[in-house]
Amino acid sequence: MRILVTNDDGILSAGITALARSLSVLGQVTVVAPDRERSAVGHALTLHSPLRAEEIRPGFIAVDGTPTDCVHLGIHGLLDARPDLVVSGINKGGNLGDDITYSGTVSAAMEATLMGVPAFAVSLVGDSFNEEDFTGAANFAAHLAAIVTKNTLPIDTFFNVNVPAGVPHGVRMTRQGKRIYEDVVTEKRDPRGRKYYWIGGGELGFHDTEGTDFNAIHAGYISITPLHLDLTNYRSFQTLSGWGLENIQTGSFGEETE
Ligand code: MN
Picture 1 (tube, rainbow, N blue to C red):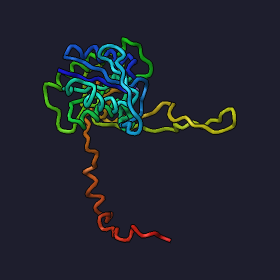
Picture 2: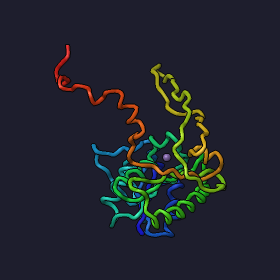
Picture 3: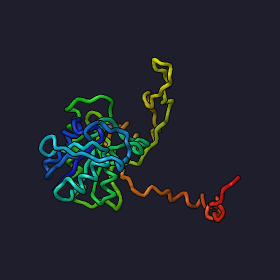
Picture 4: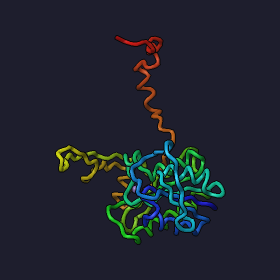
């Protein structure tokens, strides 16, 4: 079995080292990961500059691009053959609820799914980490990898896995939860009097709704959320049909208005 491992924390992160080590029990692991931290780059793909790839040690290839670039290059260029599985992580910090839309870790698994390769993303919830903190999550990832490759994931579906700090009580299948946003932009002035802004910081709350990823993590369980590439809100069609969007006459929209 060939396994491609990537992340968004960079190839030198402790999380990816632990993950590569645990997965190597199952097969041949190749790490293709960003050469530096690229957290929160989402699903960005580099199209307007060249990419360099350097094997920094056997089986570890650093790319000066995004996690999505790494999966793309890994599957289409750097690996000898198509991988059987792509695992992204272990991210230092959870990817829960709305985080999914920003996460480079999750986007890497999404990219693999787009290419038809089974994939999952793994994140370790918490704020600060020692190297050994990743061991439990890495071992769980190897266990899950064996299950994912033995079965067939539903079409266009991949897992977003979050592991709580400490010893988990078990595993729960969850749905994507929702954060409560606070004021997370800080305005400051630089020494020359110009304003600048910091996005992020501050403790974020969440809706502790039964069945969500947040709820499972909060209760000390590993959370597995099956995500789907099709983001269409099918339930909304009925409501939106009353808006008359398909009755808009578009024939004159090419003309300049005064
Ligand atoms: Mn990250």
